[in-house]
Image (cartoon, rainbow, N blue to C red; front, side, top):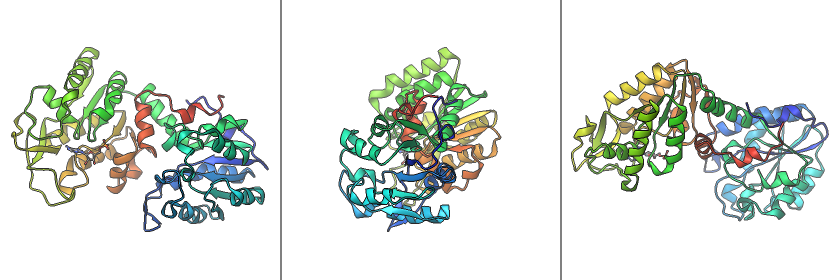
Length: 401
Ligand code: AMP
């Protein structure tokens, strides 16, 4: 359990409460195309409203790189949040984020009202954890609540710097839920614990592989990163994505698995094509071959059918499953079969199933399996760093219980 003070441990009646949320939602033509992160933030916001706080919300959105970019304004989030909450969320349009407009909006607040500040990354200091902007944010608030798991692996003004200048800093319900699910899975799992890793590169997941091998019973590898492992086994992998500098690392991990008595599952067959699809969702001619029979001029782009069955079997016998990263180039329907098969096996098990954010979360939601998972993380990078066993600065900064 997370040993940090939460919104349940404070009294916010009449207090100005600055809440760092993760409203970094995808936008298309000014419309929010996936509102999961907004919905995930509601329990904390509702609790603070019900308790009579003056609720000041803040977040970043995209990468405006330290200057106002109208297309990355949080204005559409204020509109949608008002609908979701059933009460007005006043948008404090302010290119300085904490400028005269924002200060006036906060000064005019009554208990139980909600104001949303402008995109914190309009300010260049935000991602540098600069002192001045941290102080400005803190000047708006009596209490700080961090509910932005998606940025918890970064030390920025609005989630870490600000805590130095506000007496009380606690975590929100979403942060608590994320850390409880991921923490229990990794540090106190009901066994068997199966971890599934996919995605493009081994290099991005070095520490995750190593840490999870120690914690899990079975580690399943798929996606582009599998081919470096297969090459390390001495197989011909054709033109598949391979990181030659990580072959020794993969050998080390296979040795480590053997020494620890852990199962490390690699694809036994693979879906191959002549080249990477261009555009990514182009019609493409594929075939399936055993992993030790990839022709020199072919590229592996998804796990094969036997592998999908093998991985689904491993999931069936698990009591805890953590999944991060697609099994193939899932953006292409022809190459999404492995990812779909794994998603389906997770949806069908009664094990605790936890989806790391990013691509795997998007895949699970797109495929309509979202509701069948125990927990879908709102933070890709943050959940990966957590799975590496790292402390997240955004969590560390909150007051201990
Ligand atoms: P990541 O960002 O590391 O989670 O990787 C996700 C990306 O990996 C997706 O865009 C996939 O298309 C890509 N990917 C998955 N499998 C392969 C593969 N076999 N070859 C190349 N890219 C892949």
